Length: 79
Image (cartoon, rainbow, N blue to C red; front, top):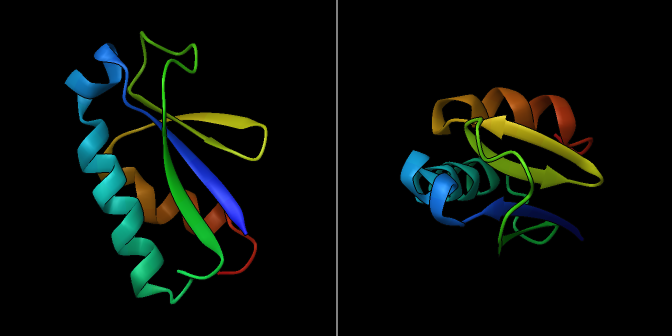
């Protein structure tokens, strides 16, 4: 099981963190990875001036919802 953390702090919330969460959930469903991946809310990941921050393994990415399919296809080794 791999966890994907999405910042839901004030800055990321205003930049669309809940849209990012929904995009991640959709990608997980579309790729039948529900047993392998979990989306978890997190507070500040330290990238407040960028887009929404997400953490996969030890790497932090700044993303918009539209970036999710491409990013996860490249970073999740099971896809």
